[in-house]
Amino acid sequence: MRKLLNTLYVTMPESYLAKDGENIVVLMGEKEQQKKFQVPAHNLEQIVTFGYAGASPAVFQLCAERGIGLTFLNQYGAFQARLQGKINGNVLLRRKQYRMADGEEAVRIAGRFIQAKIINSRSVLRRAVRDHGAEMDTGIVSAAAHSLKRLSLSVLKMPSGDTIRGAEGEAAKIYFGVMNELVLGDREFFHMQTRSRRPPLDPFNALLSFYYTLLRNDVQSALETVGLDPAVGFLHRDRPGRASLALDLMEELRPYLADRLVLSLINRRQLSEKSFIVKENGAVLLKDEARKEVLMAWQKRKQEEITHPYLGEKIPIGLLPYAQALLLARHIRGDLEDYPPFLWK
Image (cartoon, rainbow, N blue to C red; front, side):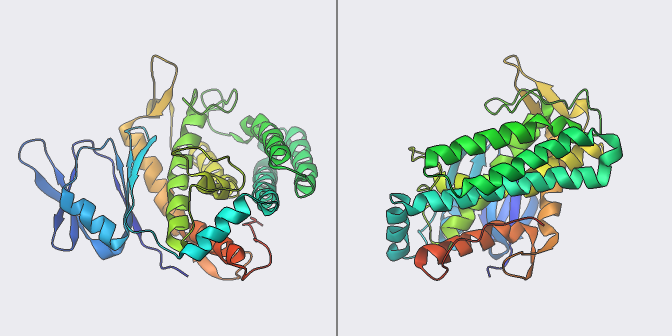
């Protein structure tokens, strides 16, 4: 099991990354730059910057040599680029991955991803009814959970990737169709009309998109760590620049890692109307201070522990992408008969 290392989030637009010996240093100030933060490189797994201001070539070299992922997002969390050093893993694992992605086994693995996503989405609904049933229309939410159960039982019998994608779309419509019932804090402001991505058109969607970007980055890093090619997936079609396998694997993790955290932030009233801005095109985005709070909640969540349902071990939640990437690699290699997705109980 890989040791959980830290992710450094650089959120201030005037920040500059420099190297001092074996340390990553964050400098601030446009003219006279002052050292604000320093961390040994061996304590870092990845660095994520928002609104990139600059980094020295020495930082690029250190990150590449040490296998530290260096990801660049714009100031609102949209992915722009990622620096990658030497490719991990062996050629035999990737050749097997490519063969499986082009064969009949791709449908079975895609079904595993989406069945787990639907089951975990249903768990989010059922947990909400259990904990806050008096504050919502439990009939509507329970009916949605029942429909998701029906879909989850049928996914593995579907004959093609297209039918599985259709089931995923139907499940998402059911799931997000009752999401407003799960919102207990300022329901009028955080009301979701429909799932909107590029751009997010309401605060709930803005939070989902922000966390999904962070999750995708973590999953992509995990896949690279175990030697798999993040670009070649089983469910999402190949497209230049798309990390299709990362999008595949994060499907089962979205409800547990991202959706529940969004609901917690809203229902605990940690965010309000003052936390967001609305652009001329209707896009709703997080303000700087709110983004810091959202990032702190993400990091705190990743430090919590969970007993992995398949491995039977207690691990930090932040290690879930690595655990699942490792299990997927073992299945592709032939060490496991089937891929065991993460199922939240």
